Length: 403
Ligand SMILES: [Zn+2]
Image (cartoon, rainbow, N blue to C red; front, side):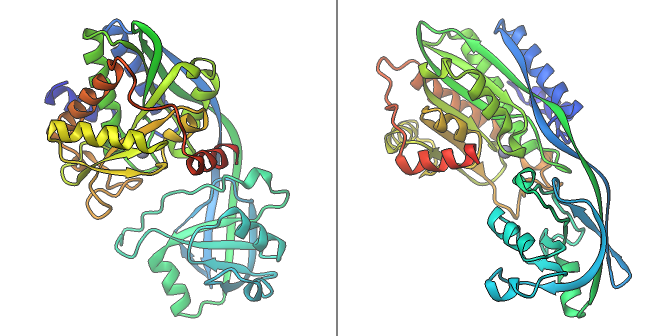
């Protein structure tokens, strides 16, 4: 892959690619076509996701309208009630929240949310964004556990500046209006295969979707392009082990694409000896990080390889919050690569994730290292990473997938 091709892909697909959207579908179709041009058989595998259509979202504080975003999956309402600030969710605060709209500094985990509902809170206003982002960017959030609640209350996200202003000025009352409906959408995975000489396989994965208001160039067109680079390489250099490529949709909504893939390909995954997931590479600045997501042996293998290649990188033993989880859950040792530019330079999941976050040169440099490493693994006579999953990581993955 050369600079021109990278620039063209960024120009053509570096725009919002929400899960289940036309943009996600078009990028999937492009990847399938690219594979077929390399004589790699590829399929688009669809799966259903629950999505929400927001009809209305309004917040009025003592008669003044405030910019807000409703949580996907929260309750619908048009209600007015007194405000109540709750810096910590404890028994004393919960005893006072009945009939009130509660201001919360941070997000709501399921347990916290349930205790607020049970204590009679009528609605939630949650602080989002950051004091540095003056143009209030608010990434829409989701109550992923909402469908399990019998009773549901409305939840709104507001900017940090507005949030502080409400408290500073001792505002008294809020009116919340939320209208939304749940619907089913189709999301897209692209699965391709280069057959090796033996049955064992490696699965290479990168997600194709972006969050709302993000162009998703760094997160994760970059990883998708690295996978394309590898498809091109292995189409011309037949691997010893089979390589499965997975460009998956709906990662940003809870790894839904890779979960669907691992369910659908459960039998084949018994032959998979490793998953390599790419998420955010090629940033202009920032260190390259190699993450072992299943066992420490893979950490040593990566460190040894980077040292031999004199490739500057750090390493970590961590179950990264990306598409590795369904593979770990399926018993496949996973590893992941990223180059971390840092939140101040390339904040992901915001409208600052633009083409400026990456450079073609950096994407090529990272892709080549990952491709070399993959070639080393896939062609190894004896596979250097054992099919062992760390107990704690197994538990974490299970908890995430079965939640
Ligand atoms: Zn990502």
